Image 1 (cartoon, protein in one colour):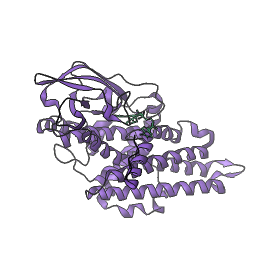
Image 2 (cartoon, protein in one colour):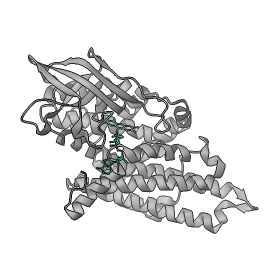
Image 3 (spheres, protein in one colour):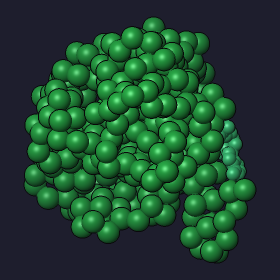
Image 4 (cartoon, protein in one colour):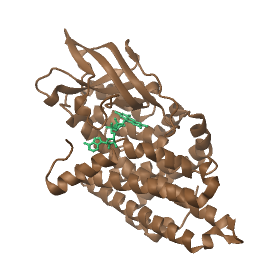
Length: 394
Ligand code: FAD
């Protein structure tokens, strides 16, 4: 595990209580012993032993971490954020597994599901015995999911699902998919409803998306629904319209606010360590003013990003966090993290382009993190709307 003086610059631990520090440290230790030694290989080989990792994360209480009941750990949002931060300090792909499982799939079932759906899926998902995915994005509809074409039609009491989802994390390894589809239900704005789809249902397939240069240690898939017949009980009864998926996305974005700062911290620590040992023109690279100004500027952004994340974490635990604040955090953390990763890469010179160091891996991963869960532009528009009262999406 890396030890650095970086968090001390902002006295970050003084903002956490003993329980939060203990949870953070246990995740950090787990990540250092079980994930970090393998992550470069998993990234290079584009594979992730997701089932084994999910069980271990379940044992740590990291899945559905701040959900209550149904076998979920019921911890604070702050603890969940710190967990995301430590996992993403290893790799955004691992944090993505946790975000999608806990904040998207489990949260949707927990928040919008029936008792039967909750009892069937949540205890196994919290334990990491069952893996979930969340299908909202389609090939032609990403930032604007209201245009989605996937639809569920009534046939007697059943629903018959047809369509295609794209870029779905955990898709090919999931036991259950939470899928958003158009219906002709008049009670729902836009008719969009959520469905809990066991992935062994006939007509469901999830081909994996390959040749990714980002989030390689994460499974990303297409979901194809070819006359997937579901019982009436498969619909999430309490989610009407886009409010359903957008509420879940807010939860996952919250984790990214912390997570991306973990990736940034890891890059900066790696760059400082490298600069201390690398000799250029007869002295350590760390001893040059240009290196130190880069390091100092990046440390400010890492520190400020942590402070914002912690502040938003406290707001969330008090039930006061607004969607605009989530957009502010997500935009700041991802944009600063990717800028830091790229700047750190310059400090590592040619070595920075290899998987011997974490920096290019984080930089490539952060390209996805910048895009998913609302692109930076979409969050700018959300903040702009809040500040000006003018809607600029269309
Ligand atoms: P587009 O919406 O086509 O956007 C393209 C560009 O246009 C962007 O720069 C965008 O900011 C800009 N743009 C769009 N609208 C506007 C506007 N109104 N004004 C100005 N600019 C605009 N989705 C899921 O449902 N589940 C998942 O598990 C999931 N996992 C993912 C994993 C990975 C690795 C990736 C890369 C994506 C994943 N996604 C997932 C999809 C992700 O949420 C979408 O990629 C994202 O919403 C953006 O959609 P898009 O790619 O279609 O881009």
